[in-house]
View (tube, rainbow, N blue to C red):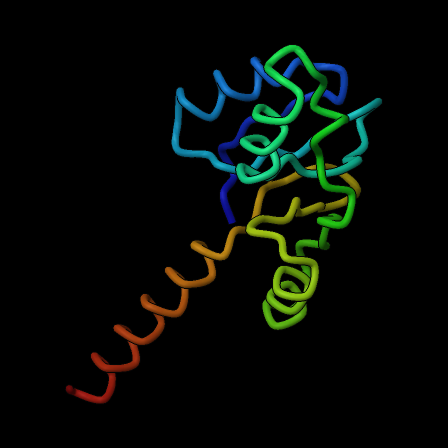
Amino acid sequence: MQTRFRTLEPDAPLSTAVAELLSGSQHDFPIIEDGAVVGMLRRRDLVKALSDRGPRSRVSEAMNRECLPVQADESLEKAFETLRHKECSALPVLEDGRLAGVLTLENLSELVMVNTALERRKDGR
């Protein structure tokens, strides 16, 4: 999971989300309102909303409410199923009730690659 990430507020203009997208490597952003995660702004939803509504429209108009948080102690299999079934490329991760990170499909792929490399090393391949 990524532990260095940016968040957005629902009332922020999409232009703010664009600036965050272009200034780093993060593609999907947790949306926080009154300290709680209320959705995710996926890159594809941001691009579509820019085309449909323009940069002055609000994050709340483009965010996805189906990409709900998972708990830090949940199994990776359950998180993967949530990512897949909800068509989310990232999910917010909560630990002790607070936003602790963002889990992406890329994170899961990297974990599989690292574990495979370590297993090969153990097996002497």
